[in-house]
Length: 91
Image (cartoon, rainbow, N blue to C red; front, side, top):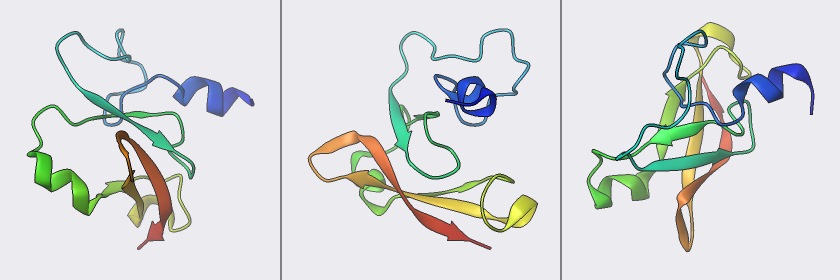
C-alpha cells in the first residue's frame, strides 16, 4: 500500500484530510467504498433512506479519470449493502 492509499484508508468521504478526527463517529452507519480512486474510504449512509442506497452514488473527487470536475460511481454490492463497489468515473 502506498502512502496515498494509507492516508485514505479508514477515513470518511467528505471530511477534510486534516480533520483531527477523520475516522468514523459513534452512532453513525458507514458503507466501505471498494475499488477505484476512493478505495478504502467510508461513506456515511446514516441518513439515507433504505431504498435510496440501491441506486448507488456519484461522489465528487479529483482523484478519478476526469480530475477536479469528475465523479466516481459506486453501487451497493449485492447481498452486502455496507460495501459499495466502484463502477467507473464520469465527468
